[in-house]
Image (spheres, rainbow, N blue to C red):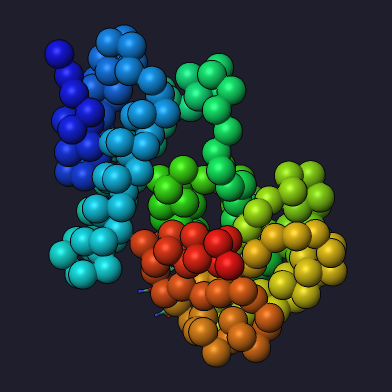
Length: 209
Ligand code: B1M
């Protein structure tokens, strides 16, 4: 018999194959998919995020844990859909226009998924109008923008203005190496976070506000 604790440990240690085998076994044992999410994957990614914040693990370890979580999610997601279980929050994320960097943005997307959000990832080089179209289509609770270049920071400002002009009710958060809290305040974002783990705390706090 497999147990949920083993799955949590497999994700924390980034053991992708174990995560797949354990998820399959636990689902076959009749454990509800939402329990796997709530008692294994979300706590596992919280542990990894906390370790990252304390500098006990670094980006490579976060990436292997994220990969293990994705293996498990691939099996859990269809079951959650079948059971009609909806995530509490919907998020849209993308790297702004002109910018092709996606490693940090992908990590934020994964951590948000790990926190139980439904994440629509628009990819890189996303124009303000593509963000607006996605907001009209998906009606998210939160929108995340990433930029890695000082030259693409102005696209962040333009995107914030464009998405706010939709008049829809959602929060907007930004991040990326050159981005700061001061810049977030200047462009009118609801928040900024310096890393992927803090992006989860940030999203939860702006959504609760
Ligand atoms: Co580029 N690049 N790059 N690059 N690149 C940087 C960013 C640079 C600092 C390198 C340098 O000069 N030292 C520099 C930018 C300088 C500046 O503007 N200040 C630079 C440059 C100049 C360029 C090009 C212009 C080079 C050229 O062609 N002349 C070019 C631009 C292309 C374009 O985007 N239009 C370019 C291209 C590339 C590659 C394609 C080769 C590749 C990207 C591959 C990819 O992403 N798929 C690349 C890479 C890999 C880098 C470095 C080496 C690494 C970036 C990275 O992935 N870091 C980078 C130098 C460096 O950082 N050491 C560099 C790891 C990642 C986990 O961190 O993305 O910061 P990061 O994400 C963090 C946080 O910032 C935060 O959380 C993440 C995890 O904790 N975060 C958020 C990110 N998004 C967030 C969103 C949030 C919240 C938090 O809320 C929504």
